[in-house]
Length: 168
Figure 1: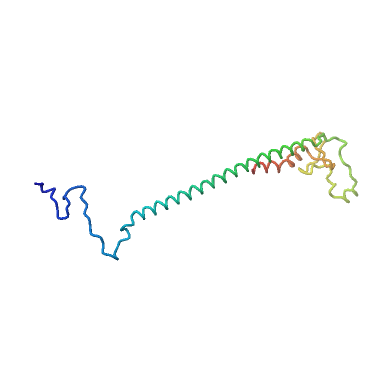
Figure 2: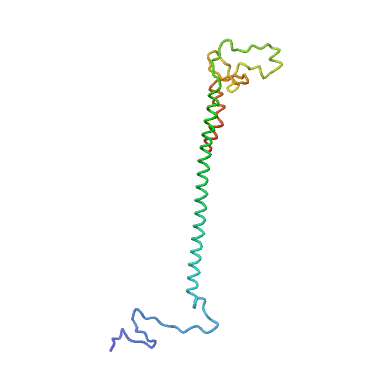
């Protein structure tokens, strides 16, 4: 005889037994639950949705990485091009003639000439810093015969290439 704790009830289960599951009768026709028979379908749908989301995420990540790499390559190429351009401009500026401003270099103008052409009124000034050229100043004279302090015109001519290099 089985002890009281392990009696078989009317449903065929041994009461108190861990693996005891009651089987219920199916719902009447037309009153089926959405879970009946579709548990595997729901699980498959959820797993398919998760897989699709992972696939979309992977595609987006790959596109992002490819664009980032392409931008890095383009930035590097622009940087190298700017360095080469800056080197060419620097060489061209360095090739401009340099000399010292002397006593005899002042441009004397009559009052009538200065009044006739106001742009030449300041012929003895550096047009970049607007300071008068003094004997002993190191100057660059361009082919158009304009004269500037060497440091002023060099900085002015190279400023845009330096600024462009910094933005790349």
